[in-house]
Length: 143
Ligand code: ZN
Image (tube, rainbow, N blue to C red; front, side, top):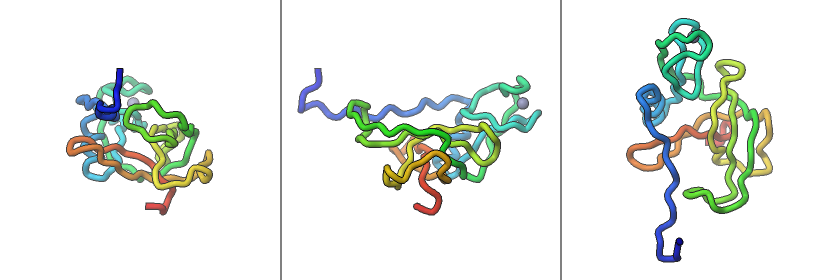
């Protein structure tokens, strides 16, 4: 049981896998790199070892525009998610590079009433610690 003397629970961090290493390395370098299939040239996200469209196992992470629009979102008002201070927004963003290419993240630097489906967003980067940087989203031009 938690007491007031316990440190706050830390936010969980993603686990880096061999097929997602370029994605996380890109984030640390302030670039959004999305995996693309070398055979059918479809973008694939989240990173995975095999293309779900053609089953080719050669995929390359390349820098993309970092632009998209909000496809759906939820505003979390209740406390209890370790490492997150409510209210915060979890959004699914459809990237400009390909219809149906979706990425999940928080929307930062935005007033909650302004958030809407279809709102143009751009990538921004949130450093959690020396080793992990998360691609996140913000309204275009707000950074
Ligand atoms: Zn493919």
